[in-house]
Image 1 (cartoon, helix red, strand yellow):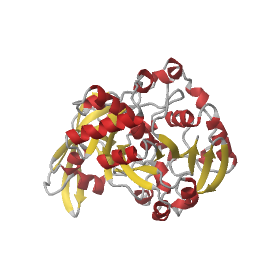
Image 2: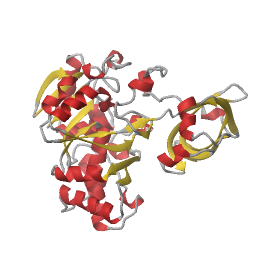
Image 3: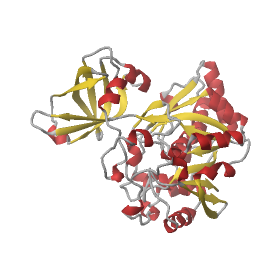
Image 4: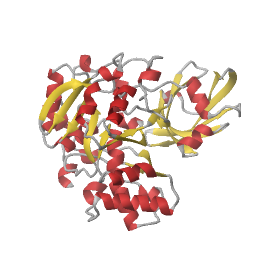
Length: 406
């Protein structure tokens, strides 16, 4: 573990000119380029060809989270514009329950122009489903770089989901350096997005169309879903020289019993679509270890801590860990496992479940680049990124994609 903690983030830097960052997606999602890395060899293809590289009878897992319109703007009487960016629900602390509230709820929020909002309640008169509504936000205690915010609205026929849908703004990545446009409401969601809760899209999934999904099914690839709600921490830069000083954000996950059973049926191996699916799948092994040690662990006790993979030396196989989860769900009559993870995947990490990965091209000096490096091994990530830079690939959220097979 010590070697991993002493990894210097500057060793994961590369030149990324602004013109290589895709500001908008292609008109047709699946016409993006696909870089294929197979056993050390790099080649270029089109994303529609992805099914050709996925083995018949294998399992592919997608993150079905849906990006919420998490940015709310309020204007003070002084004229100051305050942005309230909803990160995660606090009261109630369940996403579904929070979206269903009909009068008030509380969220952990990042606040833009904080110095102009020292106290008091912000109020905004809005129209939701043709109904005039008075929406208020009251700032509470500070929690790290975020704040507790109480929201209230004066029409009990409307849910918080209705309010966000009507007056919230989709939070596109900050590095796009542009305002959110109406088209982003569609293009910044995967075609299979279902479960509201993310403030950033699982962008590897943005390339998939029904055409590609049908091709995978026709080839006999088993398609399954899970949910990881992506937080704003996904854009949090590593500011420490060594990754030991970087604190990973907590992400909330939900995995159905069906998906666990499918994983077991496939020998505990899968192709992961996106780094969010990777982090969820790899966290399952450690959740299984928790359950093995404490068969009646509650949701909080199943949380996977940042350095746990490097501190844990369990004799449990991946299949045994997954079977522990399945048995736990049966005992507690659970259709879905709900937990959270702070897992950091960096060189020195041993992958347990993910055998192939579909992912976009990530920012220099990011934890996602560390995850890719850990997957392909050593300096091979540089070979991949040098090829992408040299062959006109588009980078980051709206950019092109890669299929990695170590």
